[in-house]
Length: 289
Image (cartoon, rainbow, N blue to C red; front, side):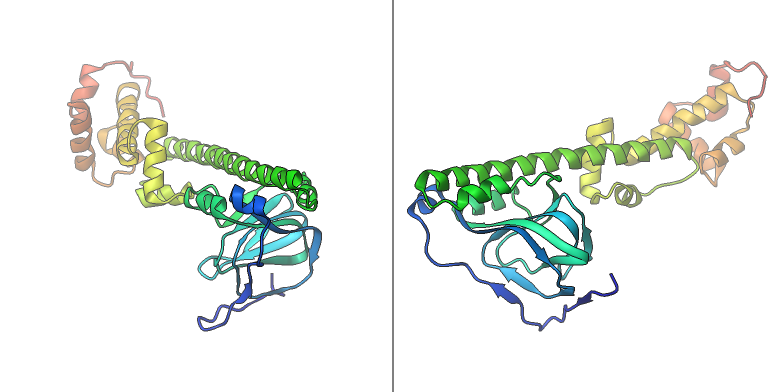
């Protein structure tokens, strides 16, 4: 992205896209107004300019390659099949990257859109739409001034916004689940590593609060307790199936101090490690590595 210049001086003026005046009665009655639309628009601009809209915008980049920028965030690439939702007065920029940004777009406004925004159905940023040009049918309806066509366009836009919300929430949940499964596998495969909750949350691309909630929903225990229990279970397995001494087992589980390990093991099981081995004589002297 070397050919893109970013203007983000705190005193820089924003380019404002104003709300058009006037509306059809059906829009006021329904609570949603499709202001204007565009199909197959291609942006070749390579500069990022601070701007905001006085309305909501849904852009679907179905071809090309784009960028998305906000003053407090990182510049992100936009790929074919992705869309961008923008709420009124949100400072941002999206447009062409190394290739043109080719889009279908719908600009809209109204109390129903405000309700969707307050409820989190509409959120600023990149979302997945897919390669099918799903905005075209709404654009066709919105281009017909007949009252019934305008009403159908409003209903279709409302349904699309709801569909995109649910689709992206399910996708996000699936991605979170997959990332969490990967983390748990790493915890099991590398028990010598100590993870902080912050590190685990960062690995899963979640805030600490979100991570704790998602982890508890998935495992039934909080992250730190899960790690403690996992290390205890692995220690118990090694105590009864190998000849390893307590110090070696402690080292394999990331404990620098074997006395700390012994105290923690007793807290979790009620037995000191050697006592646990005596009470559970399952190994037969074969000495697993």
